[in-house]
Every structure is written in structure tokens, then in C-alpha cells.
Length: 102
Image 1 (tube, one colour):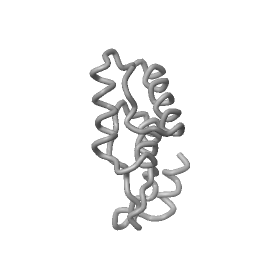
Image 2 (tube, one colour):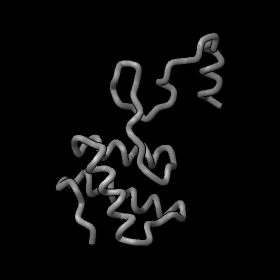
Image 3 (cartoon, rainbow, N blue to C red):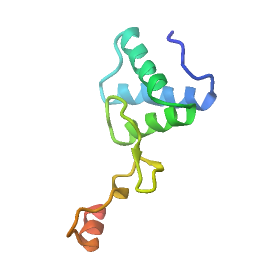
């Protein structure tokens, strides 16, 4: 078994969700080396366990097969919602809302 980089029940739960998600999308990890790479990515790129959990959830929410740095809101806080990005110039709020609800 691969050693988890964080000794936290919430991280353990998120990691189990991630492994199950990978199975559901038919992209399970096939070697312990690939699992270690994913765990090392989390350890290397995140400062604390909460950011690691948010990264896992972001990847599941966006149906990504890997991890990416957390997205940022305009105020610098982390988010996984694309709708919090600034709108391009000339884009009406009505069009943005229509796209959100589409």
C-alpha cells in the first residue's frame, strides 16, 4: 500500500473518493508508481492538507484524470467554479447567466 502524505481522516476519505472516481471513469491507476506520482504531486504542490483535499475535489468536480493547481477567484481566494472568472469585455450579464443555466 502507498503511504499517504497527510495523516488526516478527511484526506484519507478524499483520496478514497479519488480512487473510486478513477475507477468509475475507467482510468484506474494500474501501478503503485502511478499512484506515488499522484500523491507526490499533491505533496509537492500544496502547502497543507486542506489544499490537497480541495485539489482532489476540483479534479473530481471537473472530471479531470489528474491534478491541477487550484483555480483562483478575483479576490485571490481559491475556487473550482469557472463562473467566478472575470467576464470578457463586451459580454452581457444576461448572456453569461444564459450560459450558466444552459
